[in-house]
Length: 378
Image (cartoon, rainbow, N blue to C red; front, top):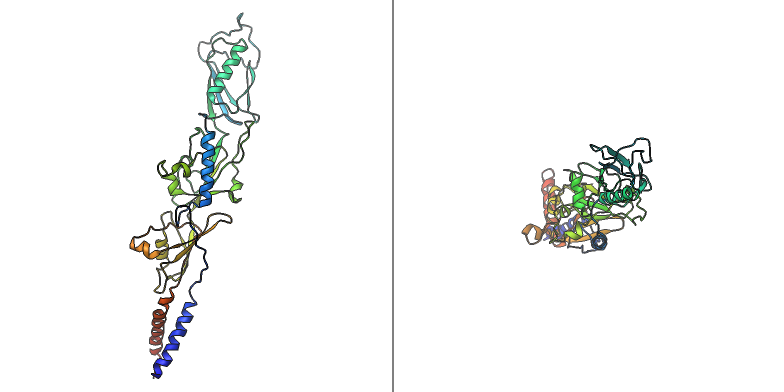
């Protein structure tokens, strides 16, 4: 009996000391947009829905809109090129119609200036900004007719080099850079694939910074990469974005882009696993790494771990911290879906108080066995 009176306080003391090793998270449970672990927060989803509605209503035109610094290839087969002159040649007839060339002779590469204008021989300055190539063809033809230069002009305008109306795609993609928005229906996923798609080291988060107020004078809207660090980004799930369909709400996630938008695919990064696991620490992740995989990478759970209340802290953006609880036992049993982890996540595996007594007893017995190997116990 005396031995038991000594053993019980020792067990409780060891249990108490051992319990102090575990974390004591004071986490505020929070619900995300699509349930625990959804990478698209409720705030970002609301912003996307509002932005998507605006862009669908604003998209009424078709075709690329010419802008400043674009290079145009202009051809007028029936117009004889007159280098160095802006006047009608003396050979013009009574109606001001130039002789028809035996082969297309007028071809000119024209750079749109900063004001959105181009200058052509015989007709002078023409407004090009915010016109499609077809619209500019009609305007040049109209000027040729109204100026008495040609009766039935044939005009061809091609955009040889796109410099305005571009979207920046940066980060973990195969070919980061700026890409022209050649069709108004282009989406976020379209631009990521235009940049070669995500690299093998890409993570699950896409930071999307929509362009601000558009200009009305035809000036080019230049993507501002500095806004990525300004807390303005909307954070999306890359996998959901690339596999979005209309039936699955793809119109919300995979919305249409506009000139000046910035799309940044984040690297995979690391996840921090703390608490009652074999090897707490920071571990590299991939796009497919889940919560159960992160715990396994950290050496698996220890016996006293409360795996029914594993907490995850996720910082989606500046001042936008999310906290949620996951039932790891339910995931293991197949009752619940596993949660994808992403860069910066902190996974905390708490302790189960009822498991601490047997764990403390086991720790004590183990310690006594080790001590008993070197010190006689009477």
